[in-house]
Length: 94
Image (cartoon, rainbow, N blue to C red; front, side, top):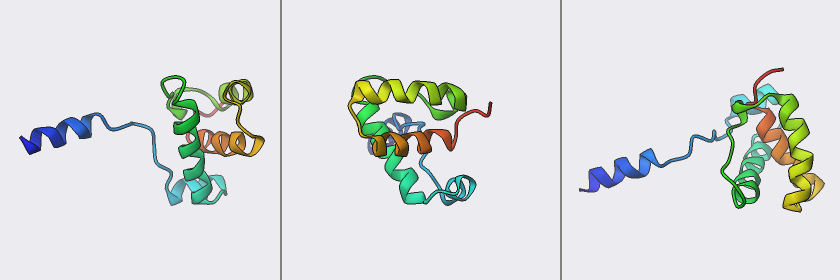
């Protein structure tokens, strides 16, 4: 029974990536900054709608979408920048 519960919880886990040092090296940003962007994305964006995976859309799409969502979510410029950095680290290339 415990094993089945474990499998159920594992299956319900999010597919949203957790930033690694490789992501930090690739972007030139600190890993803790990318982790904070992920937390803000989950907390702010996920409170209103289902989260989209960064790789679902191009960098250009995200750059157009984030400012609009920033206003709706009433987040600061700094929070939006952290979210943007997290998303762009794994978004589709142009």
